[in-house]
Image 1 (cartoon, one colour):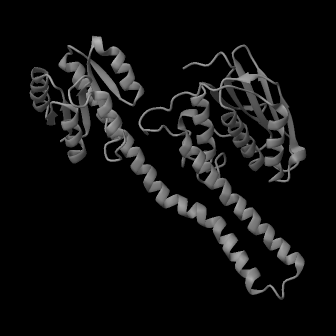
Image 2 (image 1 turned 45 degrees about the vertical axis):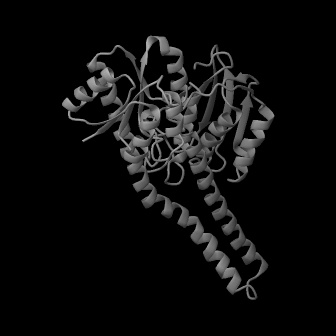
Length: 362
């Protein structure tokens, strides 16, 4: 049975809601001011909270702020009950993290629909979190252990046989350690980047970025050449960027290009050319990465997420799948688009568009 906490200082509204929601099978708790509501929320951790905005002792907005500062209550869906005269307060509440609002006088059907929607969304989120946790426990230790075996194993051999190993043998082993260390570093960096892109409260989509920057072609080219150097393939890159002002953050765009170029480097052969270009259209800055590597499978953009592999991990970061998940999240954040296609049965083309500065949507 789901538990609902109603915080309302008008007795008539509070009593009416309690009766109606209990008739719908909910366990209902109630309070007549924000302070009392806060104490009940902390002690009982209800599944959802319905709260008035203007109340004595502690108003609804300050109550919401206090609840979000507590780890135990920060994720509880919060719905404001507000009069039309309080719409400005409501907007402040929404900007502080409220999930929804219902305008008084309200119909019980509107209340039930809002509650049902938020409870289902929270249940789905908790299910995703549980699945995420389970997969992390199963997959991440293995993915981190693999490069660590190389680092610890080879360094142990050097330590035990230092007197008998030649300089060339030591250099070869040092190269293996270096590659394993870089592999481990890439995985950790991708994980941290992915987590940084997640919404702060975990339940709603992140706010679209509104930053802008002027693309520096020389700087970006050097970044990509450094990435190609890790694969010994600097000569395989052909890079051409039009200098434009983009409606996203610079580090977001750099990650987009770097992740997609890294995929091309991993899944095409040394000596095969990789073309990277950026050019403006009427509204977007369109970036394309073209290679002649292994043919892309059917890539459904909506299916891109961590741990979800395409063609048995062919397009994802060594089994974890953070790379494309990061790309998709940044594109969504920027209000752009992402496309994959095969041209003339020869080349793979990954294309994404980011709004030019001045064309961003909020």
